[in-house]
Image 1 (cartoon, rainbow, N blue to C red):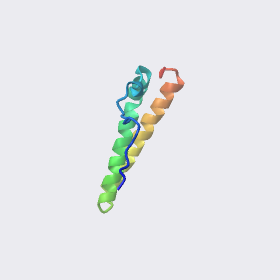
Image 2: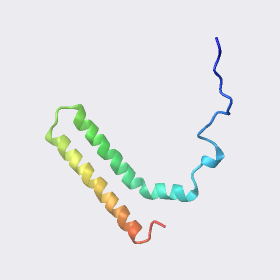
Image 3: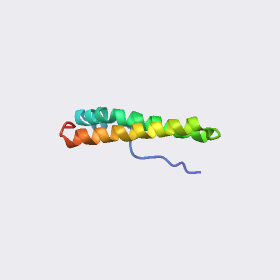
Image 4: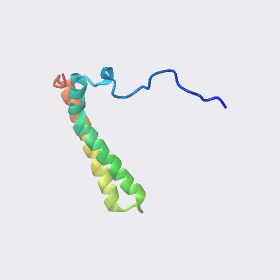
Length: 85
């Protein structure tokens, strides 16, 4: 039986050239409220799928969707005014 082996070095996610730059980290920090709002929306949608739909689930999902949209609008307005740079 022949064994199959690799001839290349293992590729890791921790290679020095793959680290995020300061600008990329700043961009992530700027978008963090929108990211967290999207996470809340997904959590609300998952909770609504796991049980029989109820008015409380629908309200929670609507509230999370409005929050996610509002944070995206605020982020877009801030970027449009030049504050994102």
